[in-house]
Length: 443
Length: 186
Image (cartoon, one colour):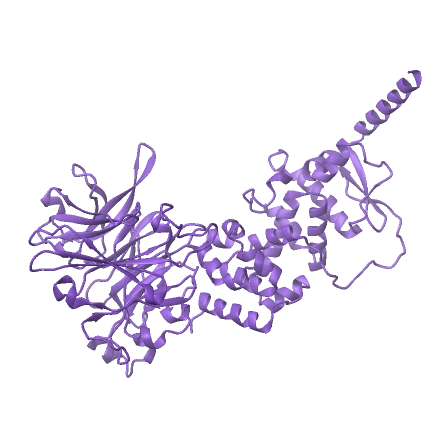
């Protein structure tokens, strides 16, 4: 065993070299190493505030990808995953009885972090806390769809808006950059047989793939480009209208109407809001209430539209008719993970079933018993497990259910103020989030 | 020819003598001498490994002018502790993998080792580890400093690292706003 001793001391009797703090000299790669190990996102952000060189290190996407803070956060580094949900607060009589007065901020959509989540803090907060301004415009707004840090909302008519009451006012909030865009009003009288549309999608530059020309996504950068789809079915003649709005200069919004196949009688987009987006397509679920399902599929890059009927055994599919949700599920086949278009179906006997639409012979992927009767509200993905928010009828508790493990976690909501029926699951890519927020220090 | 041969033999003898010694002597900037196992030094420090291989190790104490005695004592201490606790060469890491290799959590003894260090000693040790190309020690010390950053305000961070805030007032306001938007409720 080697000995650790100073074998001789030439400086014996000399005064101590130094006792006070000196300026540590650490090269950039050591600073980068230290910053990469900072355990949480908020501390990392505070480090970026310390000085410019540090700010530049932290804002570098290559740094962010290897940061421990980001890979331990819910976003899981450089991929999107579920961090919580946006929803409205309740305004029914039960809630009015509880509170003497409702605060002004009550009308603003709230963000609720998924239980156990910390990437965006652990408390319920207002949508506007992520944005520059927007308090007036967003009062009463209803979340419709979310994707990759973008949130699509329908605004409630505002006295200052110079337009007809039937107009549909949409807004896209970018939580990554804190900016929000009002979309040009859509005259609902001209589309969807005069009724409100039922299906929405908000899509990022990344959803458009590499095929776009010019490319929508700058190399190693973040594009604020987005596209919005609005879908509605005219109940009288089954005609489907799909409107596509594309971000750009405010005067230059692109509005296009895509031809869609008609829908058979009885089928509707009932209860449908956000599209399920995967493999470069947006999908909405059509159902007839008798256990039959179909999907409307829009290829994002080409705008190509198709409608597919699914011929599953009606006895399996006959669940709680109207509350089926479209989702994706990851299935392992011959040791290869495949993502498949699926539906979540709450059954009457307090069970929830996940069925893939791509396999009509043996569609059941997962089944779970629920503690009690629950409604599925929205489905998303957290760490590879499909989750859904369920808000049963009064007293309106919300749960996140992990379909694979079967565990349910109750959403913290002391005042029982959250209207789960309006919930939209929200996913975020933490690398993009930090890049967006630190854009001001990147040179 | 003869002379050359003789010189070669002498070289050979010196090398054998050197190889026989299982320690190397290191000299700090303030002239203190430390002995460390040659095997551990070569395994844990790419710089010392290079010096040993290149024969530039001085029996009377290899000068490490950039490292003070306190830091060097810690380096030597770490090498010895490491030699005792981890017999395998599994932890050898090359400098090529700098910043990209997945980080292994510090072992219990490594944690204790850095926890007992004063603030200045820790920073000196980071510098020494960086200078000597001691990847693992650098990892462990950086990890400790990273943990110290948790929950610190930018002012506190500046104080710890002795860095100057070079943001303009406007820039600072902007970035503070982003911070608030990102993490705090309004």
